[in-house]
Length: 189
Image 1 (cartoon, one colour):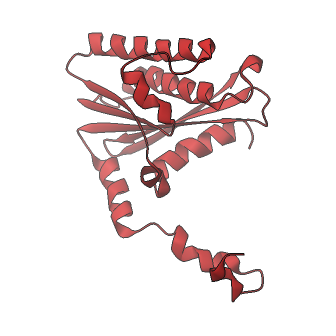
Image 2 (cartoon, helix red, strand yellow; image 1 turned 120 degrees about the vertical axis):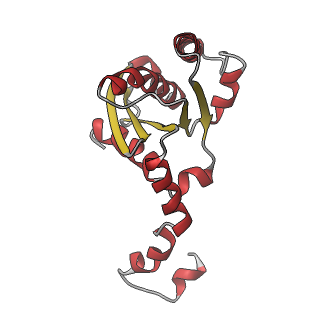
């Protein structure tokens, strides 16, 4: 048992954790700045799987221009059970496809678009679509690269980036948490 809990016996452990859960003021300001940003759209993506059944929830959170928009989608693929990398890549595709849908709903496509995922392999996507030995996952990565190139071709003045998030970026990030919760909620978790 952790030393900080030794002095406290009982059901009120949550009371002791409150100071650790509460986001610092600079993190609150960072979140508010993202919402009010008129030059950058930040898109946070996440995926979840329902008890290793091949049922995936994809969650996307668009942040910018004074708005926060959360979208989610359910995806079925029994062959990709326990392949969360597959689902994380599908969440990026879902975000790329939703950019035009969001634009039709009145949100401007700003000059700088950043997609954030918690998948560490994303950094390799800048140079290659061969992310793993699994060809099904590499096909999804190739589809992302094609969508990325198509976007750059039709929107040359826009800068689209796909980045992985560090632990610090995820820690007190309500938008990543919104994408995470949307992915879980759509599959009933």
